[in-house]
Amino acid sequence: MLAELQRLALAAVPQEVCGILFGRNGKVRTHRAAANVADDPVRHFEIDPAILIAAERDARDGGEPILGYYHSHPGGIVKPSQTDANSAAPDGRLWLILNGQEAAAWHAVEKGEFYGRFNAITLDCSGAKGQTAAE
Image (cartoon, rainbow, N blue to C red; front, side, top):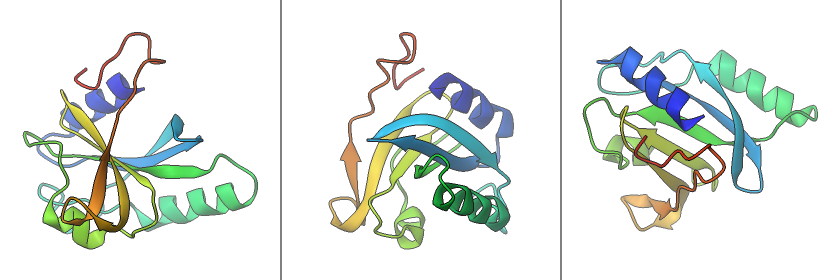
């Protein structure tokens, strides 16, 4: 799945791509792409609220829980930006950031080590047919 998300990120350049990650017990099982409705999608992302509301409703009705979100930093580093930190709720959800080649995962928490909002977590792609975070 990581390779597919990297392809989506590359295809969207120069804009940021975004979407929702679903899974349980810290393991991503699937994802849903969302339109980036930010005013400036080249520099920011905003998940289409209709997609987000539908995903929350599906999870509440017994569907796959939302584990977190993904977005890309085209041509950039895979660390959260100050803007990411300002928009992230401290809900413990996963933030996957990718750039078409590399990826990193973060938990959105209160008093995080990075910008006071995020803690880095290990991105384990061992079940992904040999993929690594850099694929």
